[in-house]
Image (tube, rainbow, N blue to C red):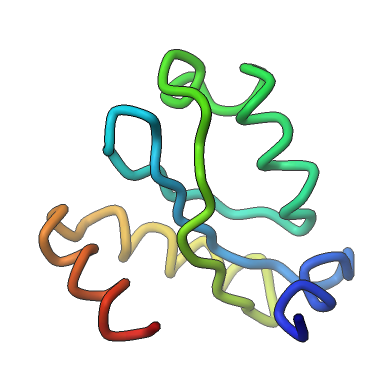
Length: 92
């Protein structure tokens, strides 16, 4: 559970990947993963996930700065779904 310990530090930013109920992926950044996923599942998160609840956390990556997390979020969003699946399978 070391990963989750870092998630609750407000100075640690991360990129997360969710799977929506319709099997699509959503990628975002946060410095409070638990609160962010709760918001997604309450329909108060991103517009994309509002009609695709519940969501499931697939992966979370830590970054030392918000800027680095934003760059990785952008990079991941450019990947195709098959590339995202390969990434998930290779990093587990």
